[in-house]
Length: 584
Image (tube, rainbow, N blue to C red; front, side, top):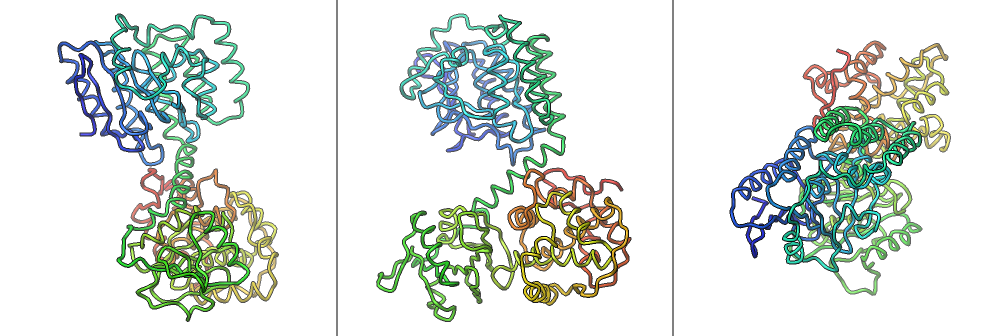
């Protein structure tokens, strides 16, 4: 179990051993319930101290991965049991206490924190609201204004802020279970949350704050409005009714597309920023070199990035060292395969062979997208460490040549525009459809940044790689309504993405969405192209493409895998409970 209960000097100590991040889960909520039940029956205890281990009291739920519709009711049950515990209870806070962790702390009779403790409700950033009774308990302690500033802003608050006095009962110079235990013994007759009213004693100020925040957030999303409504209920409804309202509002928010988009957006950022997710880290004996090949004028840039990240760069006079970047002028100058754990190809660079390859799509910068291409699922630890140090967004591709995933999506985007033109759509109408979907730049505006010769060459390469024909003879512009053109554009992008996954050009559906955001300029607040497609329904998009009756070999002709997904009711992101057959 991740919960350890022990008795020290007449005080029950309940340790939440949740690791370095202190994350709470549904299973850990169940363990807390069991531990509280067991402690409730112990005789001789004068109080209970709830404490985390490591650097944080509790980091709350992982709002990206945790299934909140299951976890939040369990959190509410834990908080209710802690609130009604027959002995005085104190939460000993340290580190950054987030979300559900703060909900647990609020359910205790009192809170003790260190000087460095930070408090934050991050739920608003995920289009969700705090759970476990937080809107009701915190409002009774702090009033409406400060409660709403904490919950609607999503920022950190210092536990030693005097304004948080009713919330944080004592601030310690350093973390001390002994001091928290001594303090809980002084709570002879503690009040439960329903009995606290410090924040409700000035009704005029309470409702003035509600009105002010309601005006400020009048154009905000559903989450902000639900939070304001729940906080207002703390002054209007009995405590139990307020809890019930919070639970209903939270459940409604969790089912909204806005919340799914926010979670998906955060998940994509996590995938693109956490290189360890690209494969299993493997340590190979003898270290190994990461070699760099590409345009000479980019060497200085990556050398600077590497140096800033703590990676020394080898020159001809530097002794061999496994944990260094080694420049090679030509791909054929690579050392023996057993000495190399990875090769970096910058703009203009090409790498072949089985060695893991890193390819910068754009000229080297701290935000340039990096492709990892490797035939293996295991990734050498030097590569993982290097990517983690750079912190550039990373995607996983199975393309034979470095940069294949970026080229596939960019040139597929161009080919889609040309194919819609062949169906009679005007260039400006195609670009307008792209804008409506969420792209900053349409395919024709993007192509204007390149010469005709470059466009022709790259589209020819795409045609050879994909097997699709890219039209050169364009039809005269006809009339195509906005809705139909929008469906065809989105359906074509889905078709291109599915084909990339089927052929192994991309390894994960999420990589297509990362590329759409970082490469094609898709609005990140919409989550991703494939997520948007699932919201609109894959079946209507498939039918729109089928209705074109284009000849075989067009990017607008649905690939077999697209039809199979719809027939079998599959989606790209089952973890987000997509509506893959919406409109069926």
